[in-house]
Each structure stands twice: as C-alpha cells, then as structure tokens.
Amino acid sequence: MQLKHLSLRNYRNYESLSLPFYTGLNVIHGRNAQGKTNLLEAVYLVCGMRPFSGAKNSELVRFGCEASLVKGEILSANGLNEVHITVKKEGRHTRLNSKTVRSISQHFGRFKVVLFLPSDIEIVKGGLQARRNYLDSVVSAIHPAHIKQLRDYQRAVSQRNHMLGLKEKVSLLSVELWDEQIARIGADIVDRRIEMIKSFNRKLAEVYGEHGESDTSARVSYGFSFERGADLAEAIREALSKNFPSDRKRGHTTVGPHRDRVGFLLNGQDASRFASQGQSKNLVLALKASEIRLFKEHTGTNPILLLDDITSELDIKRRSFLFKTLSEFTGQVFVTSTDKNEIPRRGEFHSFLVDSGRVKAGA
Amino acid sequence: MQRTGLPEPISRLIEELSKLPGIGEKNATRLAFHIFRSSEGYARSLSSAIIRTKSDVIMCSTCFNFTEKDPCALCSDPSRDPQVLCVVEEPLDLLAIERSGEFRGQYHVLHGVISPLEGVGPEDLRIKELVSRAEREDIKEIIIATGTNVEGEATAVYLSRTIKPLGIRTSRIAYGIPVGGDIEFIDELTLGKALRDRKDM
Ligand SMILES: Nc1ncnc2c1ncn2[C@@H]1O[C@H](COP(=O)(O)OP(=O)(O)O)[C@@H](O)[C@H]1O
Ligand SMILES: [Mg+2]
Ligand SMILES: [Zn+2]
Image (cartoon, rainbow over all chains, first blue to last red; front, side):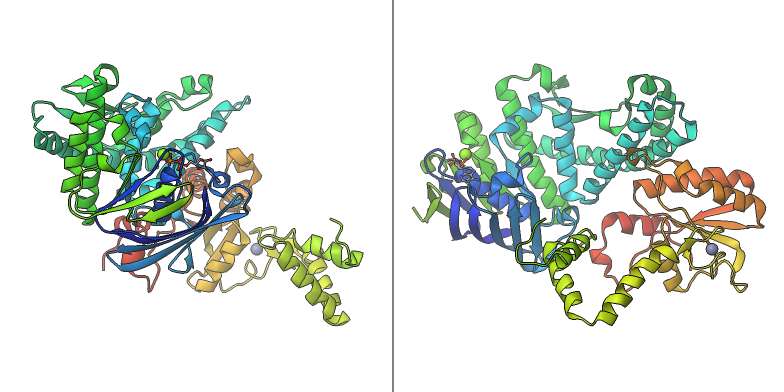
C-alpha cells in the first residue's frame, strides 16, 4: 500500500498543496507549529477516511473558509485508487474512485495505516477504556465488521440501560430482548478480541526476542467481566440475567464485553501499575511493531506507517529500537520531526520541509 | 423565511417542499418553479393527489397495511394462503416482499420496531392485534421479517417469545447474499451469517 499523491485545499493551515510521495521513508520536518502534524493528519484522513479520533470537522477546515478538499491517490493490491474528501462543518463527503462512500466502516481497513502518536505512550499507563479501545481499533483494522458490531453492541447496551432506568415496573421480557442482542453481538466481539490477543502475544514474543530481550515476557491479557463458559453468548446472557436486580438499582449494565479488562503483563506483572517509564515505552514500541506484522500476516500487505514526533519521547536506546523496526519495514513510512538528521538515512529517503503551511520537497 | 423578489405563494411552496425528506432548499426551489410553470390542471391534480393520501387512505383493520377499503385487497384475496403470516415493520417492507413474488400468504404490519430510547415499546406497535389474530385465525406459521439492525432483531425476539407459546411455528427470514453479487465485495457479517444459515442441496 502506498500513498502516491496528496492534494489539499484549505485544509488546516494549508491553503493549497499538491505533493507526490514515495515508497520508503518520507520525512516531514520543520520548526514547531508549521503544519507537520496537520500534513500527517491529512494522510491519515485520506487513507482511513476518518480524521484522528477527537478531531472535529470544523477544526479541519482552514480558518475563514467554507470547505476543505483532500485528495489522495493510493496504490493498493487492486491498483490505483482515488479518494476524494470534502470537509465542511456540517459533515464530510467521501468518494472512492468517484463513487460516494456511504459506510466508512465498510471501507475502513482497506487502506490501512498504523498511527503512532506521542500520546500513544499512554496506552500502557492509561485507563481501562483506552486499552480496550486500542485492542478494538487493531481488531477493526483487520476485521471491518468489528466496527459495526461495536456500534450495534453499544446501541443494545443503551437500549437496555434505558429500560433499567425506567421508574415504572418493567417486564422481564422487555429487558431480555436486549440481553439477547448484547449476548449475540457481544460473543462475536469477545471472540475476535481473544483471537487477536493470541496473535498479538505471538508477535510480542517475536519482537522482544529480536531486540535481545527474550528474557522479558510481554503479554496482552483479557479479563472477563462475567463468568466464562464454553458458549460465550450463553455466558453473557446468564450474567446479564443474574445481574438484573443490581443493574436495575444502578441504572446501567455492569457486565458484558464493554466491561471486560484488557491488560498488559510484563513478566506476569500488571504493566499499568508496575512498569517503569522505559519499560512501558518499550512495550508500546513492541505493540506497534506487532500491529504492523499482524496486519501484514492477515492481509498480505504492508500498512502505511505514520509516526508523529515520536523521537522526542524516546531516549537513545529506544530510538534505536524504533529505527531498527523501521529499517526492517518494507512499506511506506511518514515521519515528522523537528530535525531531519535525527532520522537515520537508510534505503529510500525523501525529505519535505514544512514552513508555515508550505512544503518544499527535497529540502 | 422571507425571500425578497419572490411572490409569497411560491415562497410558501418552497418552504413546504423543503420539509420533505431528502429535499433541500435548492431542490425545493427547482420543484416549486417547475410546478409554477406547469399547467393549472397539473397543479390541481398534484394537490388533490396529496390531499387524497390523507382523506382516502385508511388502515386495514386486519393487517394494518394502508388501503382504500377495509379489509384491504391482500386480506380479501381468496387465492392467498391465510395460514401463513409475514410480519413486517413498515408498509414499504410489504411492498418489497410483494415485488419478489415469492410470498403467497398474508401480512401483518407492525408500524415500527421496539426501541426504548425512542420511547417505542411493544404496546405502541400492532403486536396485540397480531396475537389476537393468531388466537382467532387458523395460522400455521408466522414469518418474522423485521430488519436486521439491533431493534429489528430485538423485536423479532419479542415476537417469537410471544407467539411460540401459542403453538404456532415461528421463523425468521434468512440473511442472504445479493444475487449476482461478487462474494469478494460482500461484507463479512452478511457472508458469515449466510454461511451459518447455509442449506443442503
Ligand atoms: N483549521 C485551521 N486553519 C488554519 N490554521 C490552523 C488550523 N488548525 C490548525 N492550524 C494551525 O496549524 C499550526 C499547527 O500545525 P501543526 O501541524 O500542529 O504543527 P507542527 O509542525 O508543530 O506539527 C498552528 O499554527 C495552528 O494555528
Ligand atoms: Mg506536531
Ligand atoms: Zn389487510
């Protein structure tokens, strides 16, 4: 997979931009607040058809303008694709090869990007929700159906919660309808998560081994919020019905995949509590390296790798871990940095100097 | 909205048209001018067609489909099998199934799905009427053809739990893959369901 060309009009601090990109390493450099992250964000948007999580449409449109245009040419197994996105405050309109894309989730993962932001360092130390979301995002990239099911699942939980919150008496059946949906969809969700964790753990062992840390065992763990049985759907159904009286008191659903715990274990210890700063950074790097390999293994193609200002977070030892991973990676990479000399030149290397919303290629 | 340079009646029409789903201000303006330029006869026949949808259309007291006379044409068609009922969410779903030409039984229209978040409970749908139909008439099978989203599935569960105790066979329409569709482009949920619901041949 490769982004061959990107054009922007009135996107963030870019008035107009048209740039070719290359296989190998594309280094986007320049002083702070010039538009490096914005450019990376546009690459992410055009490949993933959705912006960085948390970014609002209105923030993407250049100050004082009505709409942004983002256009990309992406080379994938089926040939050259053109993605065309119009962003307005009210919404986005996306076209893939001139056809309107109605359901982004059906296309998510078609042009897969692995994103590495400075804030990702928080995956290990962050909250339960962040870790569950991280696992779900990896699953979604490989199984687009996961996105839809997460949405349907959430909808079923909201419906059940609404029933639980009603003051008047509710019939058992009117709650069980939603238990049934939560169990049916939830079982699929948990199944995929567990499969993914198995693959993740194999890859983590590989990555640690290759970086000379085979004495460290790093694992992703899964903690059920319900008593696990042979039949997942049945187990969820039972837990929901057992918890009905207490859920009714609390007004929300306290068991199910949305309450399951994703954890990271370093040598058997909970990394969120016991890992040092250095250890958790290593773990995040290894997770990202595993993610790349997982995607390649499942789909047969390399994702596009995006790294935003990552080196600033890493000491010398961990930079070399990162650069080793990069040098082994045969796909397309975009890296931003304030200092292009920080990035070792190996293989194809193309640099782009960003200066207040303008880009000079080759500089 | 005040539109300078436009006579009030045209402006009103634009306003009314733009309330229709899928019609924005621009399209509404185009339509309004089209109507304005057409003959008076056309304008009358359009407006009476609109009025008649309200004055002449009632609900069939048996199946709750829209109709001009009660019972509706489908319910009073003696060639249709009265022992098999197909339950749908909306009249449009009934039309879609009729177009397939595959179903020769009778219908029952629920007029919605169960959705507590939208304040819709079983009592707001034509479920009571379905149950009394099932008790009153000699029905052998009820096919549940509600949608495949979460609310459609939940409603299907409600129906089957309510109807099965009456000793009537209940079935759910199967998920299919589109005919002529390339397997490669079918989303994995549909494909997975279609595989699980496969049949012998
Ligand atoms: N919608 C927008 N319109 C115009 N400028 C924007 C918009 N959003 C962000 N910016 C500007 O972009 C700059 C930040 O760019 P960024 O890509 O984060 O810089 P860096 O090069 O440090 O990564 C800031 O000067 C900010 O004001
Ligand atoms: Mg930045
Ligand atoms: Zn009828």
